[in-house]
Length: 184
Image (cartoon, rainbow, N blue to C red; front, side, top):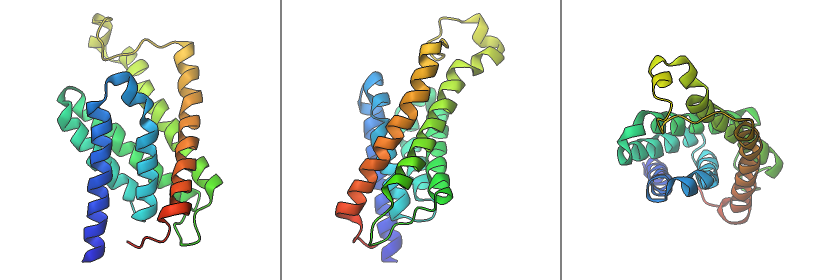
């Protein structure tokens, strides 16, 4: 019973931090701080072993969707999908949280891949998807869609893995230095 309460507390805490970063910071800054979301998802995947990042992504996405209802479905979907990707890559790279610590390089690689994929997916949804939506062509000035460019493509392909690697390093450092002895 206490373990479930602790897991629920971590899920609510990390999800609400993601909500605060996404809603209360202005748009250019909150997109740059995806590293905070990635670190929290990685740590939740380590604390709550099965689907921890997915739960935190769902809670953070739901709260953020309620805070900005215009893009609510997209916000929830991308936050939830980011959590699923983090959990998936933690499983693929066989990253397990132990009192001895976690493998820093594996966690950095897992976070780099998951952050790159969510960056590509979310960028594609707003840059490539409008080409296939009939009403998007009628409103070229709509702020929801992004004009695709080679520079933005390169930026997403470069910054996604870099941000993920930084988040993986930060999460492994926090886990190995301070959090590995906490039992949940």
